[in-house]
Length: 253
Image (spheres, helix red, strand yellow):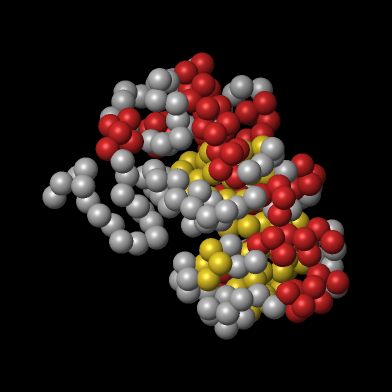
């Protein structure tokens, strides 16, 4: 097998450029040192353009599902009403994940059909802490109306947590303009890196909602933010070899 010319016809993992594979062969560095901070900050800076956001961005050790769980696990408490939109396999997974933390109100549509925004608004009128949705549902090939869902969530004071694992970097996604409070992407999809990392943007409204007493230990986004601001590295931010693979990095670093 030619490892530098292996075509994968699937949503992800995707073929990784040879220069990215070579970057992963670099020696390990001190994950608490200045060089790591420079690489990490460079990734965050360029990812802000991918997300089209001015919000905080984090690169975490773990798949897209890890960042999805970080978002829901930090925001939702057991009595919080969480509206979970499902019209495909990954929406179903997001619903199941949210049910581990909050009181889920499932909005289940026939797989492959779009979201009924009128039904969503009716549920939002009853109150909800957050709405979860998969933007690009690869199991059925449908692109869900993220902009409209974001506007409805904001109208009724709910957070919008969006799985953009297979859309960010590959389609038009405007996190701030659409009112997405937390957006998630995985490294092995449109970003074009190997599996093992996930990236998410988190706005201040989402951080303000992280008021539960027992936040997750490994997936604590408030701790991540504190460590980034103090230039210390949280346990989630130390996947060095995978970070070398980020193709958006400045190759001179």
